[in-house]
Amino acid sequence: TVPVNTCEGFDADSNAKQDFGITRKGRQESAFVDPDNLERGEFSCAVAWRSLERPWQFTPTWQNFTTVWSTINFPRLMWNTFFYAIASGIGTVLSCTLIAYGFARFRFPGRDFLFIVLISTIFLPGFVTVIPTYTFFQSIGWVGTWLPLIVPAFFGSAYNVFLLRQFFMTLPRELDEAAMIDGAGPLRVLWSIILPQSFPALLAVSVFHIVWTWNDYFGPLIYLTTAREKWPISIALSTFNGIYGAQPQLIQAGSLMALVIPLLLFLAAQRYFIQGIVITGVDK
Image 1 (cartoon, helix red, strand yellow):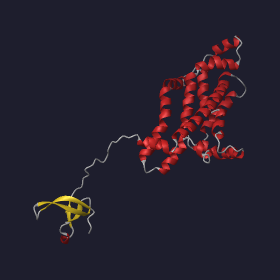
Image 2 (image 1 turned 180 degrees about the vertical axis):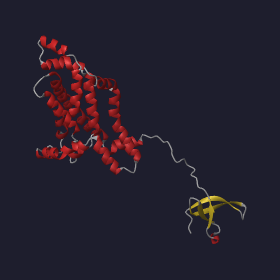
Image 3 (image 1 turned 180 degrees about the horizontal axis):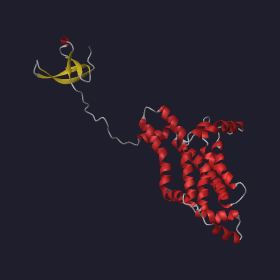
Image 4 (image 1 turned 120 degrees about the horizontal axis):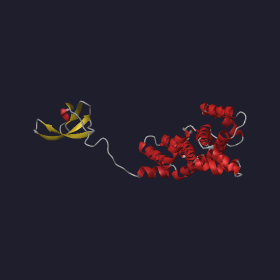
């Protein structure tokens, strides 16, 4: 048998240290040969093996980050994700503000019923509408563009409308009436009276939406599969994981790089974000 490794041992016959060849390494018993006396044959011995190196080593390096940065064109992915989050965020804040203002300040027939219908859509799973919406966007040639992801944001979001409507209802109507006496119209009241006092709620909606779009995977996967140059960071990391799944250090580095922006955004807006959530839940 050809030895695959050697180790130092003590030969009782010669009463001296000697190198032996290891032919079979086991948990409780291993086989050895004497390289100087192969005719002796293979003999076994009960030994316990221990690695001289630590099984876990802390070796920090920036190489993983530079590898991810250059491999998947990280700056381009960040720009795509920023564009998707900011463009749809503007549409969400604008549309939800107008809808919530209408429900909170105007009285019209069927207002409460329409509000209940709007809120009930929160319980409708998004996957139920995937096929009809995809078919519609494909028929008008929007698949492969940003439009299916950004345009729907300009038609409001039930949860954000509810959040802003509840906040607007905590503001005293006397301010609206005083502004109207001075000749202000509904839009002027919204711009000069409501919005300046609603900064915490608007910021909460913005943070909610930006973080959601930053982590959105299903939407870009459906509509941007054929447009690789428009991929956000979520799709790129999933593809990167499929290619470099055997190198977890690269996956962790890429995930950490993608996490930095939402984390900094939340920490910077934490004070107003918490304030908006708390005030929204307070009854008038």
